[in-house]
Length: 146
Length: 81
Image 1 (spheres, chains in turn purple, cyan):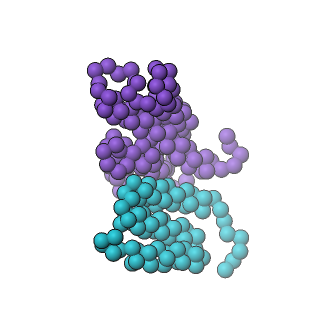
Image 2 (spheres, chains in turn brown, red):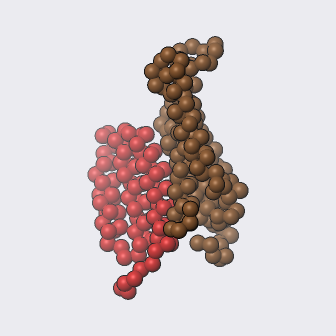
Image 3 (tube, rainbow over the protein chains, first blue to last red):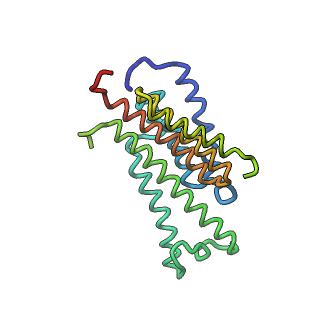
């Protein structure tokens, strides 16, 4: 996998494709409550674009997009965004993930639901992307390393 | 369903599953599993479950294919056939 015999067509094509995959993944994340898609699918697409770069241009150059050491912090941040939104509504008097208790001023109940679902989807997508990339990195590292 | 695409897609699904089982080349078998996943995503799409189809296409055809290929690069075949 770390061989130097890399195909220039493969490298150019994957480097050209990766930003468009990431843009479509962002569309899937932020449009998730109007159509098909959502946090999990968008995060998996973001992870797929990074894994494509890891496979084609190599680990050391694809770390410019997403470092190996970022995996656990970003995954934990996504989980914290998800749980924090739920616990915030719990603290402010509602039930877990009852969005209209969110402390955002000047928003109607429906807009608060929309904003809350958006927060949840951002958290889920960050967690899914980071964890999937971390699984790949840990497999590539092999047993013994930690 | 209106389109009547379930039967041909189901036959393709069965064919890809049997091919993936019969292949001796493990890399080709992993790629055929991605094909299996994509055809099952098309079946979900025909039956109207767009969200499930999306998830199956992204995870089944994208992520697990990559993970299978990475694991195959880390293993070696002991038997000679």
